[in-house]
Image 1 (cartoon, rainbow, N blue to C red):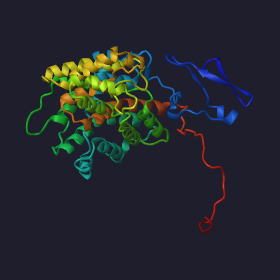
Image 2 (image 1 turned 90 degrees about the vertical axis):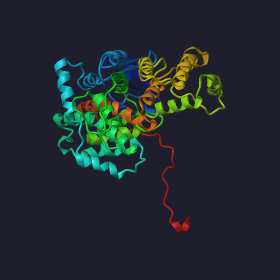
Image 3 (image 1 turned 90 degrees about the horizontal axis):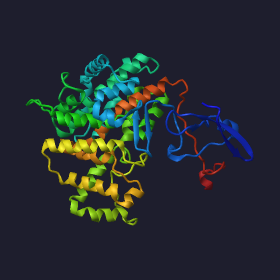
Image 4 (image 1 turned 135 degrees about the horizontal axis):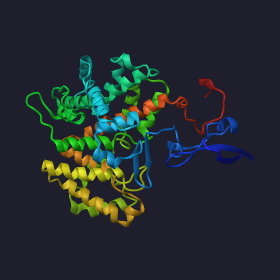
Length: 428
C-alpha cells in the first residue's frame, strides 16, 4: 500500500481508493471498501481487470512476452533446471541446494504409489472414458484414502498432501492411459526420475524391459516445466476459489482438473494439432491462411495468439527447439511439423498476423511433440493437468497461508424482474 490514491466520482460523491504497489506489472486500485462506502459494485466479466489475490509466485508481462517463476525467467528454467527443481522453487520460493533437491526427490519418489484399493476404482469407468474424466474422479477420491493430510489448518498436513498430489499425479495419469488401452498398470520404479518414471508407467509393459530415452525424457521434463504455473488462469482461479471455502486439497485440485478440461483452456494443444492435420501439407497453407483472414469463414488458426501474451509466447521458443530435437532423435519425418514450421514463419512475418499479434504459443508445438512421442490426443490435457498440479498446489498453499484471504464471493449486475407477487396456478 502507498500514500497514492485513486479518486472515483459517483452520483456527485467523491471516493478515495488506496493504490497497492506491485514489484512488477500494474499497480492495483484497492476497491474492497467501495461497496460499503458507495453501495456500488464494479463490473468486470471474466475478471480481466481485477486482481483476485496477492501472490509472489508467477509474473507475466504479456506485452513483452515475459514469464517469471519467483523471479526466474521461464526460458532459463526450461533450459537449465529440472521439473523437480522448478516444483521445489514454486513450493519453497527459492531454488534448492543439492541436498534439498535430493531430499525433495526422495520424498516425492516415496509417495508415487497409489493405495491398492484405489486402483480398483478405475474399473468403475467405461473402457473408452476420457482420461480427464478418470483423473477428475480419481483425484477427488484421494481424500477418501488419505485422511491424515486433509486438515488445511495444519502446515504439516498441507505439506504432506502437496507432496502426495505432485507424486501421485503421474501414476494416476499413466493408469488412466493404460486403462483406456486395455493394458495392465505398471507400478512406479523408484530408481527413475520423476519424468522417466512417468514415461515407463505410460509406455512400459510387464512383458519386456522399458528403456527411457534421455531425449524424450528431457523433452517431457521441459513440457512439464513450461506448464507448471501460469498465474491466475481459469483453472488456478478455480483451485483458489474452491480452496477459499475450506475444501480439502484433493477436492480443490479435482476442481482445477475439471476446469482445465475445457477446450478454451487445457485443450488448446489438441486443437492446434488437429488443425495441423487438417491442413496436412505445406502446399495447402495459403488456402488456410486465406480462410483465417476471411471474416465470413468460421475456420480459425489454433495455437496462435494468447489471452495474456501480446508478444511471442516465451514458452514457445523452448518448445520449438524441443520439437526439433525429439523429431530428429525419433527419426520422425512428419509433414505436420513442416506445416508447423512454415506457419510459424508466416505468423512472424505476415502483416496480418503481426498487426493482430497472433504469434505462435506454447500449444502450437507441444501437440506436435506429444504426438511424436506416442501420446494420443486424448492424453494431452491430462499431461497438462499433471504438470499444472505443481502450480495449483503452490497457489493453494499460498492462499491458505494468507491471513487476508476470504471465501470467494463474486457480485453481479442484476438485470432480472423486480419484486412481484406470486400468482396461484389457477389464475395464470
